[in-house]
Figure 1 (cartoon, rainbow, N blue to C red):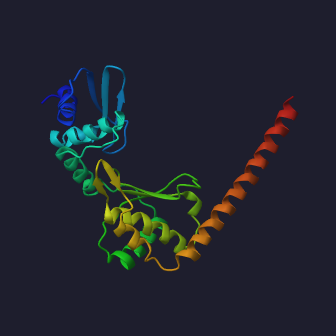
Figure 2: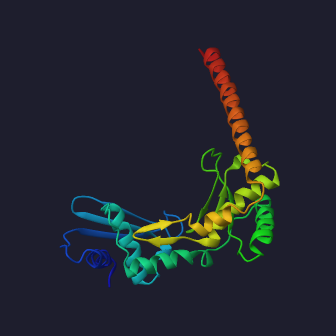
Length: 239
């Protein structure tokens, strides 16, 4: 099965009652992050871009990925759950075991070690651990494709209990993975919510997180005001 026909094969398995009348293009590249992919669709053209790591993956799994993308682009309300999509989802769940661990940070590593020991009995393999941008809404995240926990850099000097609380939530995603049903992936399952509620002193820690966000935002505004003053001064001096 060649790479152009792979899109057509995916479409026809997904929509056997429909005629396939599209031009297709499929490209592997290094521009996308690990095991990522996207789709572009116009009136008569479908193009799939895949990270280079997909090149040697079995075609049946790639068909599931392409079907997943096709359902998104055609915005089907009644999502289909094909055998290939199941293969794709099972593959995604196991990507962390294939992903090289090249990103680490001593502060985040200490947090991971504490949380893994206390709550997971040291059963979790260490993911990539990354400080992200100064985000105030998305405080932390877990990326299955990169097996990476990313924490907003506003917490780089936070207390251990705050950092460990954020780390615990993201490691629960790694631990529970996700469930796929009726074309939808659920990351916050009942089991996830039950384990999430077991973390001690949640209300007190969440109050500390709110205080950190409020404080950091205030500092950010002060920094911006000072920057504006300096810029205005130099504009005045330089005429």
